[in-house]
Length: 250
Image (cartoon, rainbow, N blue to C red):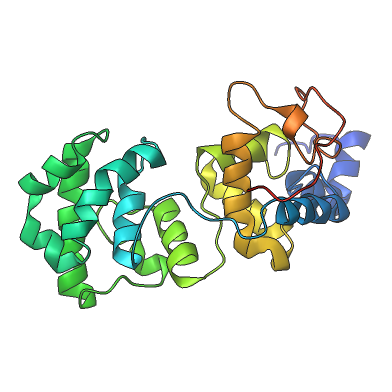
């Protein structure tokens, strides 16, 4: 019969204090609730009505544009889809166009052959399973070819007004860089952001964070001098403690 190993006082303390262990594991952010509310209050003044930068005319064209935007710029996607959506703005019209003709419109976009195949398969599934309508739930959207959680979240938010956080490279970078909602994967970051962002700011939070990452908290060299939350930011590499003037952007 094995003898029980003696328990050290430190181990005993950890074992007797599960709340302490749980708190350490579940720390979602480096900011207080008051600081987070102030961050998003400033974003709301800077960009009162933030908009996505992908051109679209309806839920279907938005879905296609977001699917095409993977590993591509919004500007590049918009150039390609301007002519495409003039002739194929519904699933049936996209099927009538066909894969080879679709490639002719999107061949300037990275991975265009695989994306064309997915768009045609997506259009077919929309016609056969959803009556040609884009579904509104994440569970249904992710069943479409080429549609992952991020794409589904963008469509839910922009097409149907459902508050979601679509974690792209900008949001993932910011969440980890400034300690707003650090996490090892986009899904972890998404779950944390949904918990720490005040509900009354959640609807626009996705676009505020993307635009902040795209134009201010850039990947290679953050423009801290232009940052409206510089005094609140907890990023180790920030270069300014003075926030930029809080004025609406054009």
